[in-house]
Image: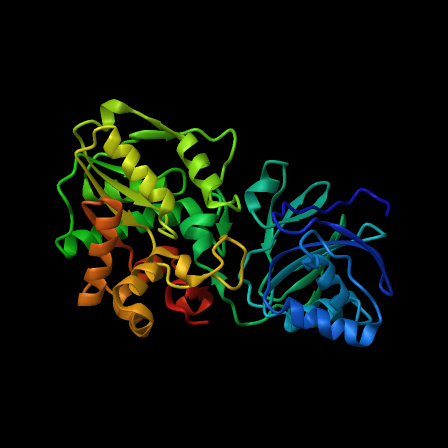
Length: 409
């Protein structure tokens, strides 16, 4: 490999980028996504190729190596990438560095994750989060469309495969995972979250659920802009009753073991006693997934003298684990607090009524919220509606993936 080009990827799963020697030449590859049919693809490849894969610790095959093996079955990078993406059940955004310094970038077939191209006087760059290259002096050039493949040199961007018409970008990017200064599909993350909080306050007011509280507070960091939007709309003061200390772990949901996640979450909480003791608080969180850390937070607030703790989730109840992106460590739908509660209430029979449990106007929906309140010692609980999230994002509903809330692909 030679030249001034480079690629990289921060991955908690597979060592990457990988250097590959193949019929397409020598190249480096990295990617992001989820391969749900990896075992099937590995068996198919080994059955006819006579090749092999290097096994990682635990016996698993590196997902990036598998993607490269699929690409190498075709006579060009664009054909190989298209073949890989159509073969994979899940998602796969790919970046390749050829030995002549050319970069190939490919957004996954349905655009579940963004891929943005930046431009400066010196050349071009590609990133998942646009803010990353702006800190390096690049300006937005354009976003790739779903399934689009481009070839990038210092002189320009050449389209190898046109974008598809169908998009299913992840709605959770705006609710939680995206960085505040990033913009996806023309919608800034921070702006969406503030707007989302405002819609939640409107819903509470309309439904008579606006509680008597002293402060609206955000569960830091991504819950904070949702809370600011709620406070602005409700005209209730915003406050930060505890501060998150983050020089160590920025994302406490990432460690593999629950005990580690709990310990890290607790280490990060520093109380402001004057804003907690004797106060009635409402916290807005970006989401409620397993709920374990949230219970730790409420216990922490009660131990520090809070008179009441109300909770609002900035997205609907999460009913299904994501099968497209590796955003969560959940290995089963029943790890999710909403699904676990349904199972406790009605057993497997309750899974027939998931839509009812998500709806706060139904008896099942009211019961779900009541039981979670009792478990977590909330004084009240409500979730943002699906319609509210979609309205806050502001792009066509048919272009959004809401699988984790609805189970619909």
